[in-house]
Image (cartoon, rainbow, N blue to C red; front, top):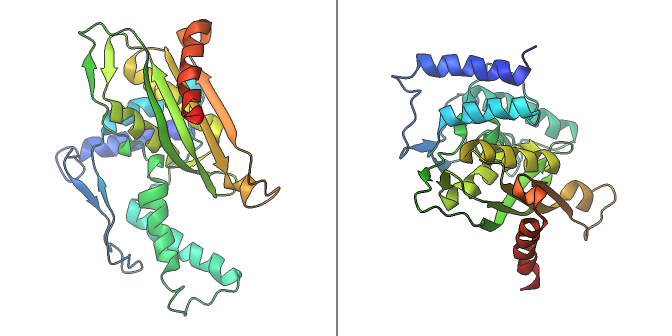
Length: 273
């Protein structure tokens, strides 16, 4: 049976195809400009501008690959465009604030529902849309490079899907090239893309691993994330000292202890420095 996310991908793909020659096309050098598109939603005076270096086709294929691997984020198709999402979120967040007893007529609170809606759709949860998947430029490994490539200390800022509070940490990603070499900044962009959605750290680690394995056509990949969860730090047990470490190792990182140790030494040297 086709999953909700698979149906979403199929539906959105048909919409993209029908708009291929219109405004639905993506320009690598274009900017996403968020502006007031609904009379019910006046956004901040300063619009958000985010580089639109995306590859929707690759995003669709990666999303399908994650479904096959069983690590896709649980999603349903809403049929809503971004403007409609902002309007609905703003209206409902206003109700949450009123239920908490906040006075939305106060000038400090009046625009909060709109700001939250804009933040959710255009900033911290933009990774829910596979059409925002980053363009990942690879080149043929003509030089025959066969040693480890490590991108360390990649910023991770996400939100816990259980409480919608911050996950804050660092990711370390390594791979051993076979046929392809990936532009280094693309690893950072892949990490950021999957972080920009409600997450649990275990799934985030898996999604980064499988996306890179699909793009690079190899399982010789290692992903390690250590992060603080504010659902632990700021509520519940309120433990400000603990952090969470997750990892996903494939190929020689899993089967070869020397390769695995080399990766861990490179990661641990950051803490020792």
